[in-house]
Amino acid sequence: MKIFNEIESEVQSYARAFPRVFNRALGEYIYDEEGNQYLDFLAGAGTLNYGHNNANFKEKLLDYISNDGIAHGLDLHTKAKGEFLETFNEKILKPRNMEYMVQFTGPTGTNAVEAALKIARNVTGQQNIVTFTNGFHGVSLGSLAATGNSHHRDAAGVSLSGTHRIPFDGYLGEGIDTTVYLDKVLSDSSSGINSPAGVVVETVQGEGGINAASFEWLRNLQAVCKKHGVLLIVDDIQAGCGRTGTYFSFEDAGIEPDIITLSKSLSGYGLPLAVVLMKPELDQWKPGEHNGTFRGNNLAFVTAKAAIDCYWSDNSFSNEIRRKGQYVSDRTEAIIKKHGEGNFSTRGRGMFQGINCVNGDLAGKITKKAFKNGLIIETSGADDHVVKFLCPLVISDENLKTGLDIVEQAVEEVCDSATSIPEDNEFFDGRYVANG
Ligand SMILES: Cc1ncc(COP(=O)(O)O)c(C=O)c1O
Image: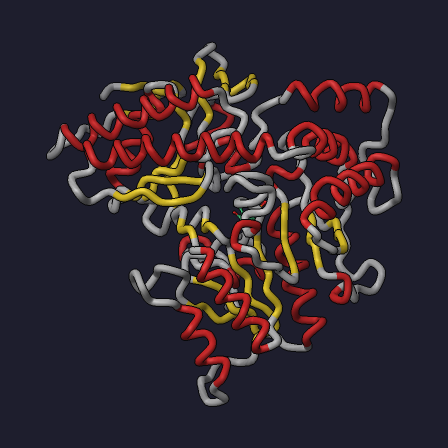
């Protein structure tokens, strides 16, 4: 463990919450060097929707490597990329009547967002992008300007410009439709808000605290965008690839974004891959204008195709996610009723859910207790006040129950031991010591 303290940058974050050395993972389990087994309800922050080392894709990946398949290909046409595009078009886009061009960006979510913002700005000739309170879109400068969180924004070192933030659904309380405000300011030449190129939105804000927009609000947002000639960009990097129950998180809302970003679970295997989907008329790029050395992660194309073939050839996986999501809703509701003292609330959609503990301290204590009992689960939200359930979608019913049991026990212990809770976990002398 010493080496991490000696030479790995202070910028580490998850490693601080889960200070073990992990060396193996399978399905919904991850193991540390000492052989301890943990249920993984963090799942690569939404990158492992199909679990760790999913056997359905592993063999295909190993075969591809054994046969000296191309690993890195810039943006060259490769067999693996062609097969991924074919499958994505036939099994994801066409069945949903979606006609989009696919752009491979650098392999991180933030690079896909950067590209999406450039497309909107260059096509419309406008600079301003409307973004939402508590939105998270990445930490490179363009995406960071669209991100709300001050912890991340403060690290920019330059002013973050070109965006205008408005309240997300629910931000001003129930019954206030914030798209009415957007419509009003875009209709008023004296509102002081420049005509935007696009609006970038998460249908469920992940890092911002599992804030789920209502379908009606999303439809209203689309209507306002259409009325004012503004492009609607859905950042589906965390909520997409099945997390909410459908492949794209906006399907049940019945909206049709102009631009969509996808990454995280797209490759299915935790391999870096990111794309922008854009309506064909928006594909006005000149060759190489937005390039990047790692746009052709062919290993990721192999597993991304396998993930779609395996899980998205019919509706059965989607039905499974909804069924499990209902279980998570029922359990979290019951937990807050029993232990939340009227303060806690539940939030989210599908398998993208959370418990709002109101207070970051409490939420942190709950996740620490859970870790001690073998569950890796994180917090999110402005004050890290939401316990965030992001387990692999392929998790067995038994393990889903076990994970929720661990959370319930942690909530009970933290809430019921009320006034003074000892600082129960210490990182001590290279060893993680639980002394609570
Ligand atoms: C909605 C959303 N957009 C963009 C990003 C940035 O992705 P990356 O961390 O791969 O740059 C994230 C990461 O959590 C995200 O949740």
